[in-house]
Image (tube, rainbow, N blue to C red; front, side, top):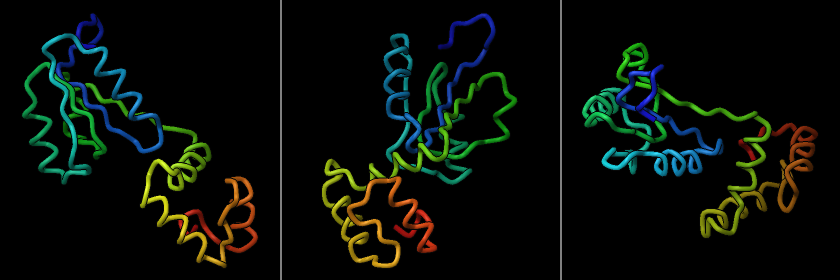
Length: 147
């Protein structure tokens, strides 16, 4: 990651975007790191600007920071830092989030979402697949956040 003729970055900052393959990307980055390169991030997400700036500028070089966080414009133009953000087609991301929220792998959190959907008679998405839910929400005047 750090040994290329085109880049002089000594710190890789990977800003994780939910439901856009961020866990897979973290695994790939960690597996690709040469021995001795530190990878840090989490468990606290979305640090305030000052704390995030302190954390990233305090990383021992070379190093990697991976977390759900904001961009730091003051570091974007500095040669020591390379930034990665992955984005995903919005509808596919929304569909993935819909199924993730109700996955049995999430235990009680999924149960709470399913119960909320069951009680929501207005939007009518309980036990519906994603496509049918979106059509039903449109007819009922609901947004994705309501279901």
